[in-house]
Amino acid sequence: MADYNVIIIGAGPGGYVAALRCAQLGLKTACVDKSVTLEGKPTLGGTCLNVGCIPSKALLDSSHHYYHLQKHAADHGIQHQGLSIDVATMQARKDKIVKTLTQGIAGLFKKNSVTHLPGIGRLVGTNEVEVKGSDGQVNTFSTDHIIIATGSIPTAIPIATVDNKYIVDSTGALAFDSVPKRLGLIGAGAIGLELGSVWNRLGSEVTILEALPDFLAAADRKIADAAFKELKKQGLTIHLDAKVSSATVSNEEVTVSYSGKKGDQQLVVDKLVVAVGRKPNTEGLNAPAVGIQIDARGFVQVNEHRQTAIPNIYAIGDVIGGPMLAHKASEEGVMVAERIAGQKSEMTYHTVPWVIYIHPEIAWVGQTEEQLKTAGIEYKVGQFPFAASGRARAHGETNGMVRMLADAQTDQILGVHIFGMSASELIAEAVVAMEFEGSAEDLARTIHAHPTLSEAVHEAALGVAGRMIHA
Image 1: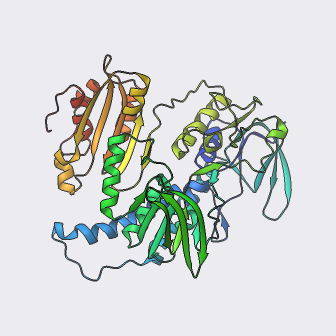
Image 2: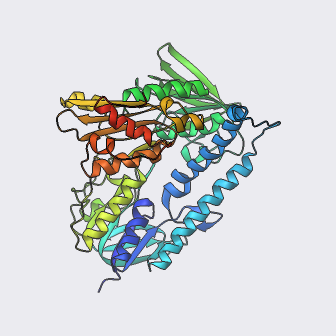
Image 3: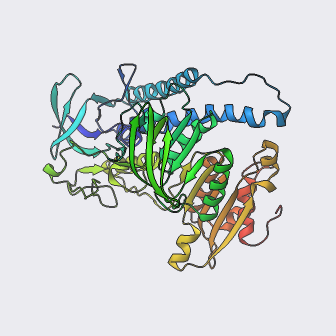
């Protein structure tokens, strides 16, 4: 008899959720994780909870409070003097949030009888996992099924070597002990924009260098253009089509050389953040030795049910490619757990929502207008500005819009794109509608409370049929 029914390698949002679901289904489950260290103690939650999604949102929230008081408190009749930021307190708040959530996962493991095997997991057979602990001790465990959930790591670039002092990756940018006077970032994706927003709000002169000619190429063009203008208004300098050739440290400064629309240029900053994306974390996994296929980019190859070439071994999350999103990894973990237990679970990928947590937020689900044009699909558009929303005006948050795209013949919703306050929350309504193959008319006929921000989604749905009320 095997030691476990299932062993999961990795305890990030994909791994720990898969472990909990396996345990709920009556499977004897273990989860291997090398454990990101916080205060010298092993923690669960992977990159997302420890050095990614959660700490970045904590800093975004703190910096937004500071920025809002500086820029908009007077609009509400709130007077203040001597406003300042205590970075140490802000960082301590972030760390407390992280600690609470990671300890919460440990509590859930205990509650659901999931065994945590601290250490680095390695495949040594199709039914065996070797675990090397921090003390160097190695143990091998047998199992009926294996789920690989090792996630991803920041992509390094040789022209800007991370030294964790002057040139840092996304993890380092979450741990600054003071506000850099001049901050540079390579990469204007979600990570770069969010980190840039944090420190810009706190007083940094932020410059972002993006190699691509288009801003947020994956997003709806009208949404991306509106966001670009707003970020520039907030004080961020964003250079597109800027290709970095070198980054050197001298006299406690970083000199970045790049070619842009104005030819060869240099940027001098106090700190430089490399935020050019992430790559699959498969090094040391020993996957090919047991028959698992890995492509040229390092992604584990799987079928539609996240099953590798070895039938009892699965892989989920960032390590298999596709959207590198925590919620996508979690849902894959649930699907795989249920299929191991004999259920026929499936996952719908065209309704995975995307969010960029700048302010106002960007969120979308489904196809963009550009994608529909390329595919030759006839569509209708409903677009509603937050400037026409009573609740948005009451909040003083009138920037942005909701755009709804629906099939011209069937009225089925094909995509929803939001730039505005609470876009990350509003997009959920669109996801639910699309999961049920709903139409714009379905949302248009659904009563929304007044006054709420969600009315903007309702109005966009009305707009698909050319019958918006408030715009």
